[in-house]
Image 1: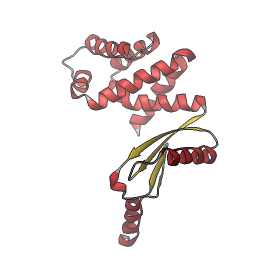
Image 2 (image 1 turned 45 degrees about the horizontal axis):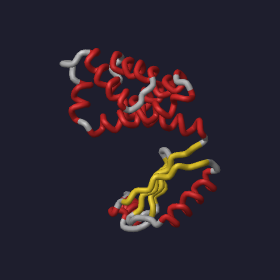
Image 3 (image 1 turned 60 degrees about the vertical axis):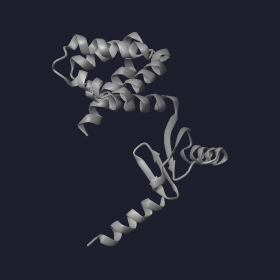
Image 4 (image 1 turned 135 degrees about the vertical axis):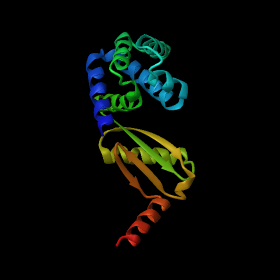
Length: 179
């Protein structure tokens, strides 16, 4: 809870500081850095270890940010994250920033996972249905998860609509084992 609150505050501050023309570039930079933090053990070690100084950590992040097209305001922001010991929140800040950008655009991120790959026609039909239901533009990411067995799992922000067989079985097990 604290982690997401901190991430939202930092994302909001950055969003308010940026020029409208550099918001998408910063979104791409934050997404890239957030993904790198999740995947790279050595990057997490550099930013978390007291063996590396503030200048070294800032240098690593701003260098990576520059490669990802980070605007100057964003590079200063990355330096502040290092100075305030908030770099570990970078993936959450990236997510919060993306939500702010989508909200400003009137866009909604939706994730749909299914047991098998959906055809293009099915994806278009689901996207249109979500757009009509939510009454806004949607950006839908489709994933395949064989553990679902059948059905769809739709994630809209923190709301999950689970109509998969596995989800239904889990719900039934929970209901049957209640005392």
